[in-house]
Amino acid sequence: MPEQSTQIEIGSPAASEAEAAAIVTALRRFLDDHAPAPTSEAQRQPAWLAAALSEGVRRQPQLPAIWTASGA
Image (cartoon, rainbow, N blue to C red; front, side, top):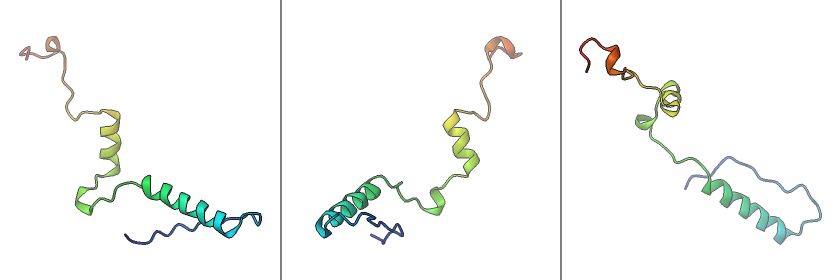
């Protein structure tokens, strides 16, 4: 697994070395568990397409049958 660029520091001098290590390990696991899945360049969608799909927007909405000339 490639190393992440996230830097975690404990700012409290009251934490022992073991406590600080446990906190950093827990935070690292949390970040690893909740990171988005990696995608290849070919699988990525343009931002506008992702937004449209998330909003449920269709390219050609289906019109009610009474609005169309053929009734289809």
